[in-house]
Image 1 (tube, rainbow, N blue to C red):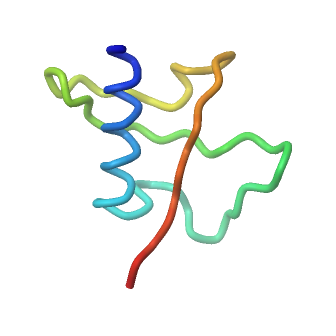
Image 2 (tube, rainbow, N blue to C red):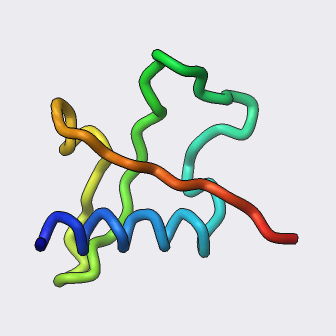
Image 3 (cartoon, one colour):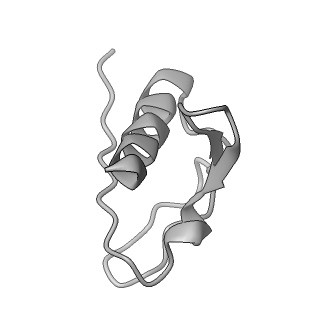
Length: 66
């Protein structure tokens, strides 16, 4: 449950903060690794990176509403 909260916080931060270090010129394709990024966690603000979840299933939802 704790990891889900951290993951949801990371997704929310990406949505609110924009791309957060992910280069706009790079668009991930199916089968390629997603560029690594680091965001603060909800619980304590410790940095959490996407690479910490290597080997686990991670769902990243990106969208824009402008």
